Image 1 (cartoon, rainbow, N blue to C red):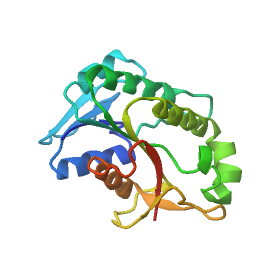
Image 2: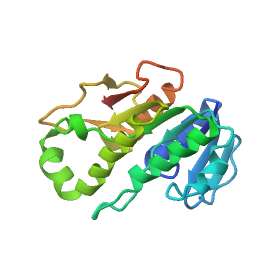
Image 3: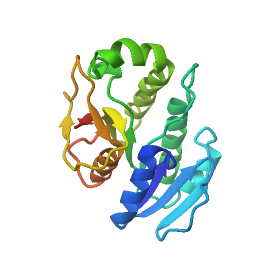
Image 4: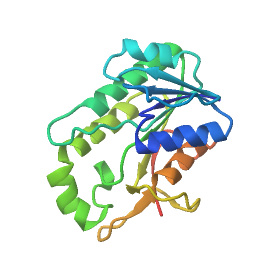
Length: 209
């Protein structure tokens, strides 16, 4: 397939890119700053910014699906980068007739707000990541309001560990007391699996070890 990966320079985005190439897909990777790296067969880097709708059209043309691991480092103040950026991505998909969207958000927001354990529920989310998680809630609402064939993937706390290729998935993952975790490599594998799996079409699914 021809895949556009949003947030390709982040942790999950890098795993998505590597695994998509290993599976034989043709990958277009969107980044505000294209990394200096040797060319890789099947990979095209495009400089673009989700906040600027015009920059998305060149990347979107000819794609079969979009995988978004969009994130940012601004978490100490109000932000709408995730929600507005995703709105622009969806508009570009609609212009180019791209239907399939698989988007990573996070466990512990919206109707799963208590499923990341006491540490996240009482401290991390309200004190450190409050603005960031609030924008993830808006991001999910934007996706749900679209007419696309979407899947929202909510991972537990992300790690840089190796893939275990074994994880739990479903609507009821997580616990009110302890924090559940999962590697970015496993999140990437799960997201890529959704390209050919329709179980979670137009729904939200949580994953964790």
